[in-house]
Amino acid sequence: MKIWAKVLKHHKIVQEAVREFPARPFDAEGWGQLIAELVKPLDLASPVLLNKHVQELYRFNRTWFTQADFIESISFDRFELEIFPEKKKDKTVEYRFGDDESEA
Image (cartoon, rainbow, N blue to C red; front, top):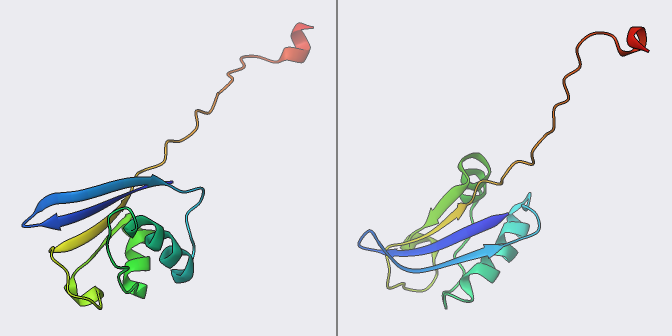
């Protein structure tokens, strides 16, 4: 799973990072650890993770944090997380016509 973390100011991306993780977390604690790893290279404080954010990540593959979600004052408008869609593995379909046993 790849996540794109973006810092936006006046609707423009001022910082970004893409990071790959082995699996999608299922709870707020797992997402909290993942977000803590994402904010390090961007030199940001970790936002307060609410159930709303976890639900948005689960349902829409994206969420954002504003000043209200940070304890400290921030110098940007939004911090967004977006999960890249995972590529589905190709499934090979084998077509068979007729009955193989009758041909043998």
